[in-house]
Image 1 (spheres, rainbow, N blue to C red):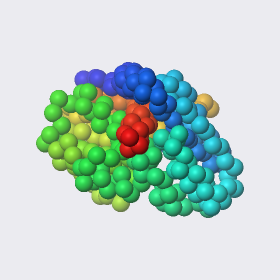
Image 2: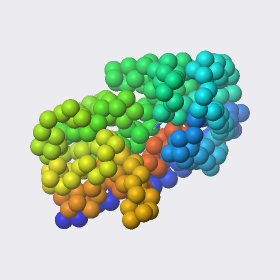
Image 3: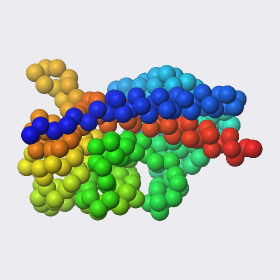
Length: 289
Ligand code: GUN
């Protein structure tokens, strides 16, 4: 058996087209949706992510502003910038690229964001709303994973989903979303025991562990759907290459459907960031009326 290759690029293009249409409607109402992206330091991976986000924003007509700050920026300086952006009515979305340099508290920075501008959905206000099943900004990567799953799984209700990884950015919000979709949810993490055997119980597997090719075919029940969130840079025959947390060729022999890396979850993360920014702009314009 060979698995269906889930095309994240095509799904993202659809979401971006809808988002671009929504941007047009906002502009017709005199609102230019805007996203401010803050990058502290010079982590090369973050640099690529931020460039991609800014470029995609421009493509859909969102005004995007970049603040690139040196690695030795103080926490006070960063918090002051966020406070100014919170108070600037022309800024609808604020994204602080993670990770931050070690001398800055990620929690303090995330909690300083106006929850209405928190297009990443990381502020405790949004995290709490999502956990309670209330409307909130949904973190972009798990939102994209859910959309890809909805494209290939006819009925999520009652399915057993196993999530590998418990990060605040992916694992935990993914669990909340799948629970909201009436899945039975198991979270595995670095201290879990019998991970392969537990994973083999799953109808749906979402892997966000940050470990290249961690998941192999012996972890997967025949016919399961597998979503690979991993983006690992590895050197292969002296060339830099991206690989996921799933051994694609091996898992494709047993899974029903599987996302590739690159071209799977990655494009959906950015498309959802654009969608969240449009939502932020729409909500803020309605609040002002
Ligand atoms: N670093 C890795 N993923 C993300 C993300 O989704 N948002 C932000 N802000 N930083 C990240």
